[in-house]
Length: 444
Length: 165
Ligand SMILES: Cc1ncc(COP(=O)(O)O)c(C=O)c1O
Image (tube, rainbow over all chains, first blue to last red; front, top):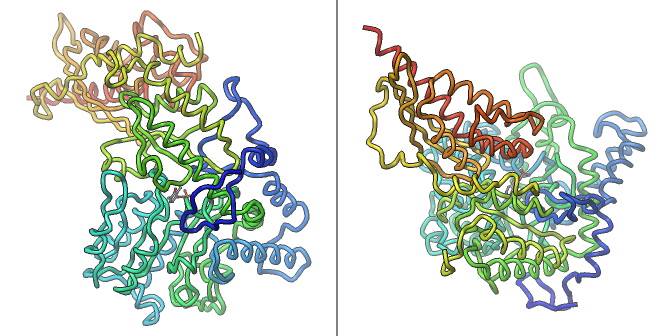
């Protein structure tokens, strides 16, 4: 077992998962055992969506076979069991990210979670929920601050919120290496800043943003902090309380869970002062023909029938991750990330976006192959059974800033072998020759 | 030929580099609405492939034919090669035969590899037939052709307008 230098969240006693353990882990993932174009599947697209271990698939099936029912409604036996499973799942996932049960709201995915926040603030801005929601209300002199590296999911809901309220959207720029320009951030965070929304780790750059520094800036001016934890919840040990953010979102399908489920964390006192977004059944106390009273969080934000079996399956996913050990997963992926960036950046004409070799990086790397469009790169790799993501990865402004329209991204997870990373690197080395694009410095 | 080689045939790789007709930026601007000229911008939002294509229709013998075609674009080898091949084929074609060619090309692309290319009609574009087996790439191959179809429609509409006294 290799010991790697201890990142901020690391514990010196914990070692990275090793190749033997990863091989055992792979046996739990049926989808990985297949051939594509006559080659073993090399799945390097977990940043887009991860695969599911058998325990997750079984949890969902077991729920449907044994206790499928509506939750929080009806007094029959199955309804009680389904409600227990649903709420146990909430407790499990809440514990996984270090928060109380009633601070975790189920959503369809992270995008839905960010929209929930933006629309709740929007409703507060037109006076819904009265004075107690005043701190979420935006007016034309207010500002919302995001970063230049955001996924569209953490950008467009804020653009729209600003349109509706007249507030101004600003962004913290990045430098050429992709790091947030913190001196600009401290200039941009002012008394006008009401919301600071940023990603924990970029889905393109693979960097880890300095949450503590940004939270401190926001606290000084009383701004609310929204953390996009989509790419961190699956890959790093997380404690939203310790990070001291006000809100956070993540998606189940990126962390071994099923599609159709995600969550919003919000500090309890904030959630209970916020107006609801979606309204209807399951989120009310008293309803008359004229108006309704709302339940406290989390039910206040869970109108309608919820993704129940998905919540149960997501709990099985986080149990799988906890049993494996998130620090060990994170250490392993840090190693794979280094292997990626070191191998890829050594290839002529290949430029890896974000942190360079030896710098902190998660287990993903997006790169540009000079003279070959990302789509063609992806096609070449697919022919070898290697699945990567190509395109702008829902981060057009970031790509534009880096002078690109598209890139190719390889992203790992706890089931990725070092051999798979090496296969990718070897394959990428063959791309420019295949497409007849001479490497710089080589004869053309 | 391996799957990949049938997709990226030598002819396609060459066209993706030479980019015939890919000189719109160097052309003098034609005021929009000029009779016989149409211009179309097409974007594939999935991958960001982009093309702006301008085409001119003029009198040729008794009828009409495409006299010029220029484009400017950014995209993958398939989309760039497809634009280049189209630009070499289109000049001299009557609007009706260009339209027929576009229709066949579209049908071929959507066939998932079940249709044979009409090589007489498609000429070099028949080399793109392999794309049909890769549904995710069909949009790339179609980009320039959709732009040409739209530009042709505009060019003809402009002529009709200009004929009205
Ligand atoms: C950083 C980041 N934020 C938000 C999202 C959106 O997640 P979802 O599509 O599951 O809502 C993603 C996933 O692509 C992401 O990587």
